[in-house]
Length: 436
Image (tube, rainbow, N blue to C red; front, side, top):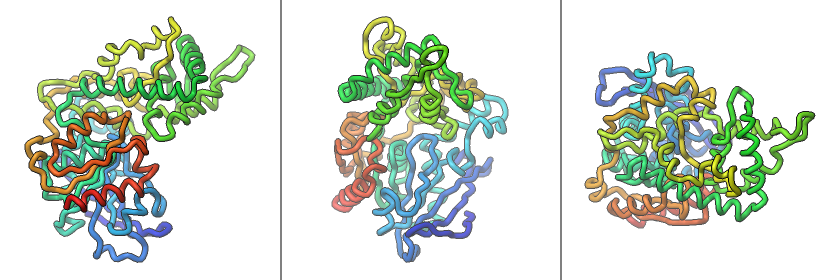
């Protein structure tokens, strides 16, 4: 472990840490990669007197949040913990994965083999590798948001001895569902979110159809070379799973067109806002391994599950929608082959993505028998109609983990840890202490 100098922000003292860990933990003498994590302690507190809380960000593919001072849930956490904000492997400053770095691995087949080591199992083994040097061997509390909750569930399955408690927000995965089953459930949820949006903003029905019809004839070039197609426009539905996402989508749609000498055109402002929402330049790993996080059958590839499952949901077919008078349905948290042709940050990685989609040999991520005998205090916030993680799947898993206590709420959407972070964290801490 390498520790840099400490520095200050309002109300906090920050310390950078770097760690060397095996790329493949099954080969500890093989290639190593570097991890980065930021320690946060409340100003004036002695870190030696505080237990550790490890934060695992959502994703996959996002580095830990870059807080300023005691923002969001940190305000509550820092009253009793020193917090470690870990950039999971491949994200942030932890050996980042992108179109610029992956060619260092060689041909696409080697890139795909490399990326097979970026799932929850490797992330948890990273955490266990760095924990002894930070805590002196003591277990720590883990807070997992979304995909971070998937990682936390794997932690409980494989290394519960490293945990004092586990806190999960919007991230209880199905223990057994295939990628196909995950997306079958997802499209029904996404459709409900669409209907709720149009009920709130009925004027958006015609606006969305007009934009889609325009793009069907004139795909747009976005700043930076991103090509906006009808399918890309539909993927703005990812906003509908956030607390204020429906409102953001409405404001995006309301001023899409401007008059030009050649007739109405999509405005530069609209296209720039769309690019900011749709580009994977800042988190390409999300697109590359998104379906792999659901792969648990060694014999079965994911085979572009979201794309295949979508074919069985014709209401999401924009061509059929525009040929009639149906509402255009936006899609949500799904990754498709066309992402790797329209997004310049992904286009060089298309063959690598295809190889990952065709890959077999994935190993199970969760151990139901071990979870059924769990002794670690666990609490989970489950959002009532979470667009990103199926509520029914989460509650089934909650019943499968011994002693897990749930807080099911419709006060927040999937981003509750951000919108109401102090309250959410406080509630979960109360639940695990009641259980303990």
